[in-house]
Length: 307
Image (tube, rainbow, N blue to C red; front, top):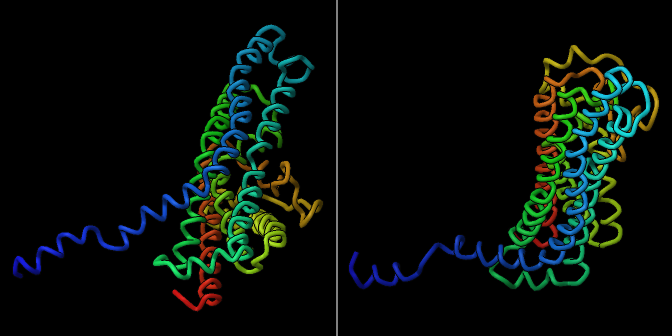
């Protein structure tokens, strides 16, 4: 290769794919600045409540030391087992499934508005393909919402692990629900909600119908995951521990706030089953999210007739 041919090649800089990636990320970041600020401000009170709750466990331990273990668990005092369990469950309702439904609505609105406002026609004239454009927006939402939710999940887990190990909660389904429900799968549900919003909005292309269909689809998929006990196919050692199905509720389900719950399953597991069950449920939720995003991209390709 001669110097004349080598010079221009060296001056061309990074490959186009890499060169286009950072400007696209900056555009998405600018568009999500206002939602990011609003979501951050809405997460602060929940974080403050979880931090304050952690400080109350010492009051609960003082109550048990003063009145005795039996009175702490079966009598009524300001910081007894029933009170602290109720407060911990109330803390969990703030993050257990509402962020996933909110993520579904936000993804649906952000995507459907591209179609309704006709701004999507402008992207067809740019060097960025529609698939990359929408994928970047969905990925940006995933990073934003997952990044905000993860610290809240960690704070909650610190609270519940301390309470369970110190025997500061009641025995039974409430304790099981508080310990087993929230974790990595909570973040995976948010990603599933974003994927459901992506598919619903790409299919309907109207903001209001998509904003209704996306959380409904998210809820239905989670309900099917929980009711089918599909996680036990991955966490097979726990299969033999679970017996019976609850006949009542919607589809035989109960609920922790709006999250579908299988109380027979939760009551059958113990603390050692937390990570295997959480990771199995997380893997299934992420697999579903991947399928929904692929379906949305396939539908997008058919609508614009362009890769």
